[in-house]
Length: 330
Image 1: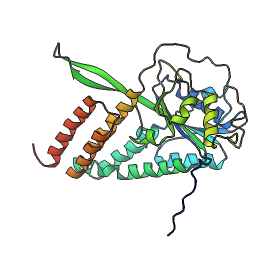
Image 2: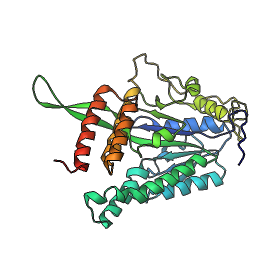
Image 3: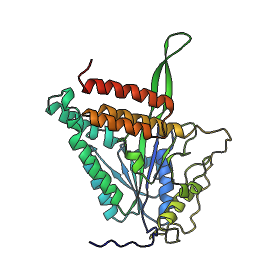
Image 4: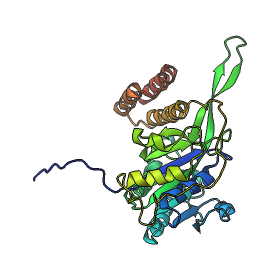
């Protein structure tokens, strides 16, 4: 076998963009603006809609083709819908909402629950019941990573909380710890870039994952817009004017839509990353099948620079409890 090295040159590629947030954050509208920028003024893009046709509310503002995807929202059906859009020649595809693949009707959690019940619905079969759902999700992600169309995913998000004891009153209080996208735990980190959009500044994307070379495309105080989509297309094409075969990057001007003008500081983006990281490690510790895997999960915690000292302390307590359970100690 021979091994040939060549000069590293970024080839023509595609981007996967995730926009997560609660209702009112501007996910759908922002996705439509990004898609128009990516494909250019004459390009075609499609919307795969799992929200009962809500994307059609924007059909008088944007020119796009629409698919009303019905349940079951299985990973296989999502993969088939994207394959059909790619085969139809759409240069960009929006999926709204990707969260249904995880917790919607017929999604991964439903697949797990059905398998769990079939296997006897015991604590021992809980992890085994995830096998088919996770395998189907992995296959779907592999299909997305290989697509030759740009894909923008809209995801719901929920606010995570924790209960703390007030040192002065001794009573328990609720403290928010950030927003969590509703999706498989690794989904956001498979993306080329991902953002959180909140209802206090609709349309403004707080980065969850954003490569250094893409940061100039996104003004942290402005809404995600056509200009950002155009720049993404140029970057994906290797930084040339050959941004898209349908005309992306050909001097597209964004419509006169008001941007965020407030000088008020935006929430610290790291809180989204920390919240997601915390949940990832909790799941890995809880799903450890033996002491060796539990120890490996704890090593991942110690190496994760996204976590605060308090979060690592909480995860260590969780790790100790798991080790006691696995070793049969009370």
